[in-house]
Length: 164
Image (cartoon, one colour):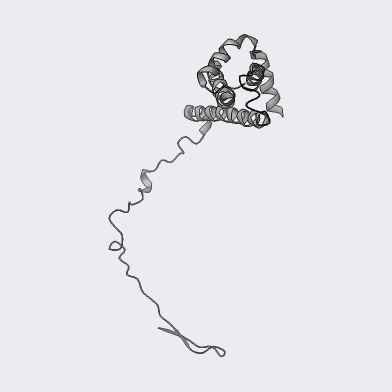
């Protein structure tokens, strides 16, 4: 026990609890011990994530998914002002949305862009066409009326996005 005295404070006692030096009894068996320091590598492994192929694929998939999400949210905000009964089976509306898809989707190869376009169209226009098969038939019949993007347009758009 330690006793403290002060003029303004009355006498206080503090008890000191001593812990045993042997900690092996208090450790449970399930607690893993840290690895010994001599077995750790001296250099960082994969310290540059940009060189990993899996990181590039993850980044590419994220870019494609975010591109689709941005397009769907923007067009959905525009389409919410339209009456669904009035524009049911509206081919002109579908052509305009497909043209916007062609302009907006610039990242990825042809198959990835096509898949993103189909997913976005199905997600946006399903309310206006009621059935996915009917929507796909309409998309197939008006495919020649849609303005296709080319490599030059996509590249210029990428450069513009990079500098803005």
